[in-house]
Length: 440
Image 1 (cartoon, rainbow, N blue to C red):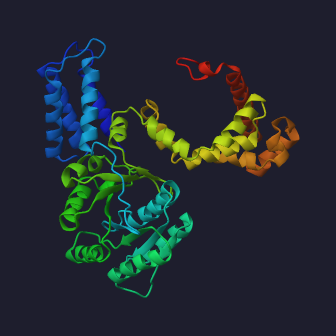
Image 2: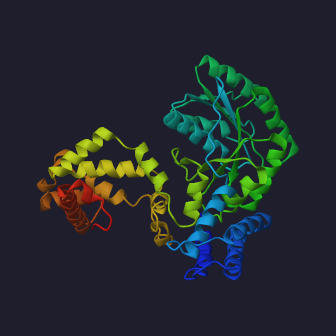
Image 3: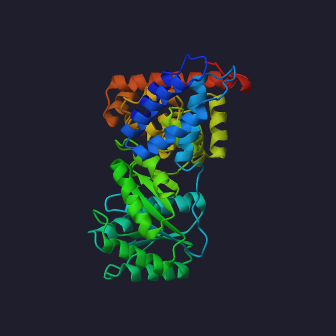
């Protein structure tokens, strides 16, 4: 999402690299290019100007210590200011109350219903909550059915009243139903319109007054840029919402909404959503997003995603098998599936410092492993467990079963064997050397 902004900021910093000290002139030139980069990313000009004025003020007169270059110092200032612009620190959901009611609002097409399903999944699997999804959109065709399908997909309860055309009554009954069903969070998916109108605002305000939500989350389509910011202000002026959700961050957006919305409505961005999968929802961390914008990656989030899929006992068993050179095709298949659960491959690569920029023009499909998976799934259990069992006749059968050429099967077998040898070599190394700097 921020690729163009990252490139332009990097070009701006390039001007001051190699300078021995910070001066009014080199800071002024760099700051001018930073402001232009922000405006090009659809950040409001006033917001961009205030941002760069703060950067200039902090940079001028800074003493540059010997081990830090002026360029590095300016990058650090910009990083801190970007994080501050987007909220400074992560803001958690208020889940007090039994049940805690969360109202989801926004324009039609912003992704409210999909987000509601993702939030239910997040609260269930990461927070140990028992959510109830509520279909309060009585206008959009198939809205109730969509929410029912999502609820079934993430295995949570859903409250539906197909014959009821009063969303306020539906929401009120849903809260009562949550208490009787021992559900401790109620997520109300409200109706939207193609544009802000008084009828929609009055309806959502009436639902708010009826169920007294702990959280009102405004869902904004990041791809609409500054329009999302303007819509957020209109909703906030009427509903005084408590947080923002940015959807479609994986789309071809310039990033202005993420950088401007907090400054405009003075409410935190609480979640960001990428893709259609129900687990593609992340808590928003301003400091980590600032790092990603500046091309520094986001190792912390990558580790957290890995930990969510991490099975300590399975890892111990896997290490023992590697030590004994018993790592097989089934183990490899299991690891591929764990990686896929972590999210988009390109998004994961973008969290590794330096890798995101290197791969920005490379199309990394989430289906990249499908061919390998087809080859492994065409093997018998015995073949998966013992790679040495596979001779030429078995390879031909596997190629036929997976729809691959024999050459592709041979290439995969060779690469797998090389990987096993590398794993075994690394396991023989002393523990302190395996991850040491500069080791290959």
